[in-house]
Image 1: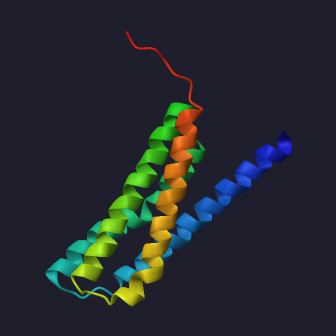
Image 2 (image 1 turned 120 degrees about the horizontal axis):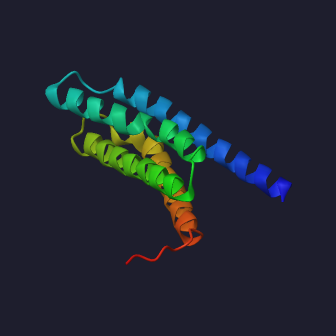
Length: 132
């Protein structure tokens, strides 16, 4: 049981590290955007959505209840999905060559899948409460 808990802690630390690295890469990608009205707008949006998953994930890991954990993890997923849209918009707007953002986009997609699966698992193990 104790080894299982350590395994889950390690897995969570790995995800948090990936989210931190994602935030760093988002910051570097933002610095490559042109200083145009659109470039500045996307940069502002992406800096917020792309850097918030890591601290929100840390908050989820310290949640006071299962419900709180699920809520905070859902925020992580929401921010990652928003980041994905901004990254795609950068490419579609031809602000940065697609090849330059390919790894960032792939990592964002992988993180979305990991967090979405974690949410499904957390919700499936959450006790159901009956409403009146």
